Length: 390
Image (cartoon, rainbow, N blue to C red; front, top):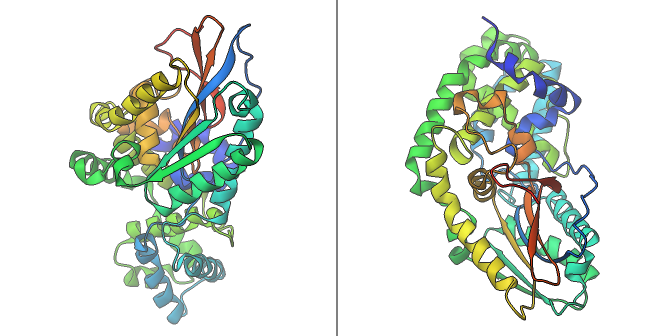
């Protein structure tokens, strides 16, 4: 039987070109410049509704480090690390040391990603931020989490530099989390299903190959490491966060492409199962997205009302807020429902939900008051296939 990942061949080249793409939703943002389609004659951009995931961050806790680092230390003490193992462990200690006191916080790269977003949105849509049309108000809302607040600050600092005549208001708190980001504890069915997906795909991981890379005596190391799958998961997820850090050592270089791909498939499908458009859980995910959709609609109606002074509504949250949104409204690439067990054949978490992902809804209006909306996901034009474009 061919390995399950043979159906993911269209992602293989991308992973080989940049192994860090195996990081799934931990991947740092890759901006690709594209030319935007001009609006029909007579239409000008007047308002932008925006949701951005925070930029690159540190791991939120020590759990992934605990899956592998104690075992690496013990193997080091017993002289079992290969040269590659010594190098990987040294880099892992550097990454771990940088995490201390910063778990879950935005990294310097995360700030730069948001500054880039802020710079490009003002360069692409200067009319919205000129203040010349009477629209001088920019509202910001974010969760109270540091990485969201600093993302909001980094983004708006740049926008304000381009737009000195605008007034910026800011608010962060649990009040806004109610629609910006769900509480996973309220959706136990999603966690339970995630576990089912992971269990069904563990056979993709050949831990013996990783042991041969990291250890000079794989059998002796195996007697120390009580759960080879969890150990390999920890190694890959510690490696995955590295590109987001200041030190950013290349920690994927030691491993076989199939091992990297196997872990990517598992994390990819788990994320699709719990937060995207899976055939099994799409209706559950839609309940997460509804409050945010309501907020977008209500604020857009206000912004397009007579004598409105609103230029933009900027929201800053998390992948678990943004992904349910774009899945539920069905943007291109998220408009079909696939089984979570086969999601890797059709969908890439690395492409759809890296750090600093964003949905920008740019509202255009003509003199008659007629409105058109341009959608950009990760700064590329997209559409909702269920809706007929103008």
